[in-house]
Image (cartoon, rainbow over all chains, first blue to last red; front, top):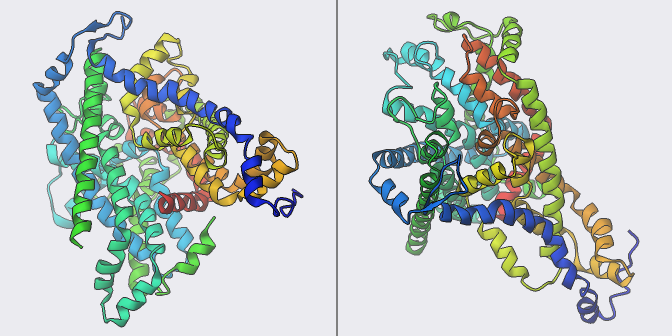
Length: 315
Length: 282
């Protein structure tokens, strides 16, 4: 566009204030489409979930809601399925998040070297992220199959282990479900760490190496502190993701039911909510679970932030 | 987009053979499940259970694919996924660019409050609202229809934030002022200055949105059914249906996944760029 800037130049501050005026009213028109959809399909349902959680609601008769106060929450607190799902969500969350982020950090460190074919490696490592969780889970079910899976075959031929029951036993099944999450998200987090590493001022490394710091010490004292905000970001996002884990344990169960295994050994809170709402037709109870999950997320994020602040204060 | 700027900041340490070896091993391990799906799709359960499982695919994969297509509505699912993801991508680009522009360049009362609301809710999970959302869709008679999936995902707070950050950098105030002086309306300024300058960010947001929507599972599995599925919902009826052999399940999964993986092979570097850029800004 041939717009000349110098015409405004003589009175820049004046011109700015005067000619921005059109924005005053039209601003609302520009944000309106976003906020209408956002309010109708996100904000309103979030708030309504709290209201529904105080009622007895059935799918078949959802117009007749009976007020029952906090009964749904009391029900949850004394429900062994809730506590089982709560524990499973935490253990699967830890098994899937901790190794994932550590590996991502290592991979990012490698990709940060001057390396030939770096675009190829980055895209290749992001392939699992591009694979849907439904496809990935269906694939991993077969990889972990007790009789025909390649993983048991590998363990048997390398370490002479007897076949592991990756479905029926508690810890193996949780490891298998976690491995789907790890496979899909490690490359993604590695790229985020890589971006963080590349924004660290290189002169810090030069200064450290002049001071005689080894590569490892440089990693500990330059890279890690420089990455702190990025690491915190990935921990928070992974915590949120882990708390609402749903698709992987649903599809990992060969029956297709939201039981999380024959004895609920890998049933997560997300799966329990689905079961309460859509299998047992208890929408109020499911809403109470949803709100409880949200509170858990907020607490988990606050704990993470608290740790980060304490670490920052110490160094 | 910022590949050049980043490469200048890259560490000058050249990778030794140890680094190459490790990166190659990691890449192979990470690609293995996808490769092995092709192998599994072409062998019977008995062949897979043998003492030395096969490592190469065979042409029986095509027979298995034919059987998979009889069991699960995969073609219907792919077509529906294309409609859903395409519509959501166009909607997200349009609505989020409009709102991102307003938050970046227009001054109006309550702007910071609305922006704060948008950013503050970025981390609220979808699960929080699915029950009222499901009841709403049931009331509107939309469950089972694609619009039940499209409507709630039509905008994202992330998209607004992403576009706002880009527009603040890429569109200088002076340019907008000059357009106003020339008598252009806000709409003309938006269409003729902001949109052309913002195209690269729109492309990245579009690709990320398409991929996320294509792979979305949680809400589609609630809102749709196997009569009118997206491809992700069709995978479920494949896996929990009556497939007598894992090879058929694998062939179907492969068939539903390959289109997006091929697209990813071509566009992957832009998506990598988008994720890395988002990381530095976020």
